[in-house]
Length: 318
Figure 1: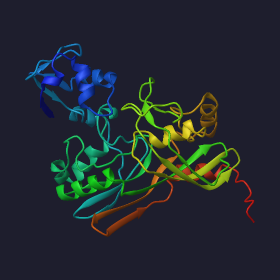
Figure 2: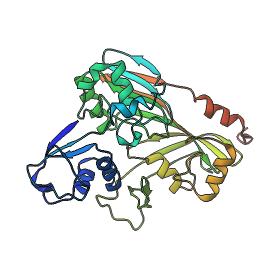
Figure 3: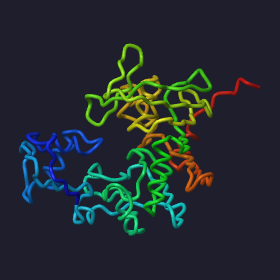
Figure 4: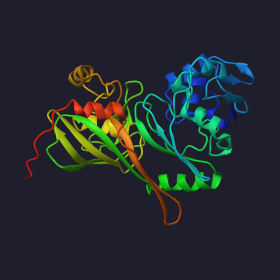
């Protein structure tokens, strides 16, 4: 549970509007869902989304769901690849939410980690995100580092903020990309479609708070008929950045129905992949100055099997 004394700047606002303001990455609709599910109270009483706040009110909310709900949702397997005294490396599977109400009462990666490593409950800026300094979308799998000590949390957080952490992804996109490498730098903003991010071409767009700068670099790893396998490096860490950028570039990721077109959604269904073809495959960071730690994983079986179904294009460089 997180407790907050309502400040003056939130006075007179509706409860759902205020909650969406307090919680980064949450829409007003998501805030209303939290309120409806009973995860929010005002002055120790259940309140309606339309309730107006007053300065000094006691607002209490939870992002983790109730334990009773989690009993009905068995925790999925969460592979721990390494566990040092300073940090934990996990290989998050697709379909597992990192933290928060998006799990709809099911266990999150944060819940599973707290059971295995109880000490992380005291690490970090928010009890709902114990030791977590970065995240992956629910639909994406791969490497995540979680801090076990406050000092390491702060050190890792600073590296992510200063873009010193090296993160590489592997993704399969629809269509063939002519260039062997490139960079996408469309600013990102929340779209009108719920849960979606819009990538806006830079021409004619003013840089406002709503349009956040974002940079995604890619290198072609292999070309298939109708598809391209990419190594992807993000220079910024925005929500849905890779997925939104590649879709705006005209090459949505395989399996990504949210950012795809009607045509690519039909192709996704034909191939039968039940997740987004995107993996956080390589992660490198420092635990102290010039003391780098690097981790790399192979493609999960379902993605490796997907590639076997595709026909490679002949290499024209020889």
